[in-house]
Image (cartoon, rainbow, N blue to C red; front, side, top):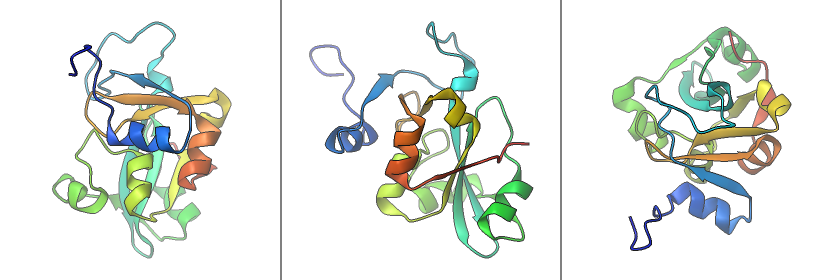
Length: 158
């Protein structure tokens, strides 16, 4: 905490500031069941999942926290025969983030992994994703996020 009681900006927030992409900073830990602020539904929060494809290597899938990712759909979309979750012990080594802090903005800064966002994000206009630290999130326009990280929208949930 800084002297004014404001949270120090995460690297993800600094990246968005530098790119002049508007966002709202939120203190939400999606890993825990918690009371959400008004105007926020659990389905507004999207989880960033890191997987590995048998042909492409690492691949990122982003789905609402209330849904499950379809590995079959993601594999087919990405040109893989199969994809599977990256084991938690290898997660930080692969993406640079620990479980609960993975986010497409930070990952894109260091890696060119393919990124797919479930198409429900387009309908919602805005999504909430991790800000790169557990307990910190950003609410951002879905299309702006996809454009910035080079993601494709697709039906990837079960």
